[in-house]
Length: 301
Length: 301
Image (cartoon, rainbow over all chains, first blue to last red; front, side, top):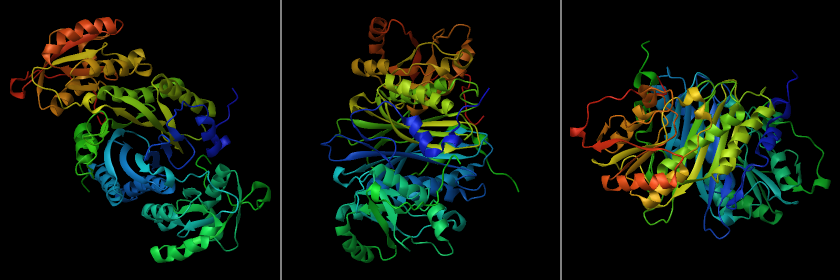
């Protein structure tokens, strides 16, 4: 029998598009699948609810000998980073752990220590979860709720031609250096941005700029161009690696050009420890650069 | 090196107790880990939010050759059943799927067809999720939000000595018969109960009465006794199997004795298709029966 099209054949983005097509919706869903968080709320509500789930898998997102505290930190920090990307605040978390029954309790407690540490640092309460016995690789999934003011909620899809693109921090080498296990979600920075600036579009960089920037551009129905030497690389990391390594958990965002200079000045005063780099511009699709970015990370390839 | 205490050594309930001890909390958490759902809300809020996550794992909760539509139905119906157990209504779901990349897209779409079918039947919108490539067994986790009126929110912990215990439907043989893949969460029945009766404690039966009833009694700081012939068994199922098989997803609840007779009469009129059985009573711990129930299902053993 001929085998049908596999998930690998189709790749991650197109597989997900195919799976979520035609799902039941409801009137309170402002944003469904496809952004960093789902957004729930009515047009007159003072706060909207944000929902997000994400997971880490042994052997893929962390090595088997990684300290469990670091695994816990990473699993929850990834999700908190998605709330930053919406301009929101995380609130309540559910933890799903699939783990072999012969693992030591001390290991599982180490996971929870890491989860609790980052939860505590960002004001998140862990309110429940599920623990399943599994013979497979360890799997840790975090579902989280949060809130955002409707006028500060930033989607991927609001980018406009002419917007200036910025990224926080430096990119690349996250796995090699171990930064992927101890990064700080940019909640404070994103809240400051949405309080003081008109941010048209924002996302966090998890699969690498080479995969994520085209997603933001596609969601906004615009093209983009990268400015020469604009991409801030971590020490010892090539430009190609900075673009394709992934797991940076820095913010990528677009603001109108009239705010760009003012932002750079004020940023340096508020966040002297964290670099902010202007990396390019959004533009209309027909004027878009034909330059291809290296691909970034596809979870099915 | 001597190996430390494992999760299997400790068993499921005590492992989970050990893991969730001392987690960060916040003032809006009415109920944290340990009930069917977490409950979030302030004392004056007109609605409380319910949160729940649950998962199914290939080879444990379903066989590898199970139709994907049935797997999807089961994964989401289990979670909806927990909202029934609180007296609440499910609203929005996030889907996490860990799946081998060489699975066919048609299989994954089958899973989503099952998810969408039960979601649609219970007014749930699927608003997002995560799809990860995994070499291990297929893992499908559903996180869900919902709502409940504060005066209709039923916990496991409200049972009082003298309360009469009821279960809906019949128990046992769920895996053998395939009922675990096509059960109907008792949302409609639970909403009717909390509208018309003072329900002191409620939960859904997922691990078998033998594991779940002692959990309800422990949470309520009471004992219990089972009435002779009170437990409704499915056809071809022994009493021991009815008590210990699990995966029934029927409701177990406790109401004051003065409501019990009235309930039985009105139930028969409203839900003529679904049996309601009085199975026993809650009582003070010191007067509790010493009868041991067969164990039910422990996920780590």
